Image (cartoon, helix red, strand yellow):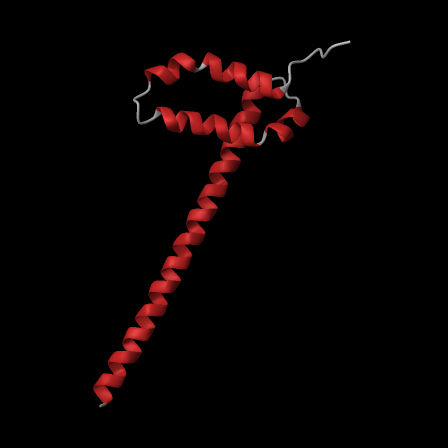
Length: 103
């Protein structure tokens, strides 16, 4: 016997097709962003398939949220690293200035 429910990947593909007209109406600069959201949803297709929720859009939205949260974490870490590097450079510069004043 075959499956009674479509797979999550099939459902996600159908959602993406239903939103195709919306995508085409977007400005060109936003179309790759729209596509990226569905890439995020596909990244978590295995977990979403286990949920087997009646509304696969909810799984897709949570997957998108997870990926965006991950990106925010990465950006926050990069910003913290940059700030620490700048603080370190400021300390080095102020130390060099102090030595110059002493001579």
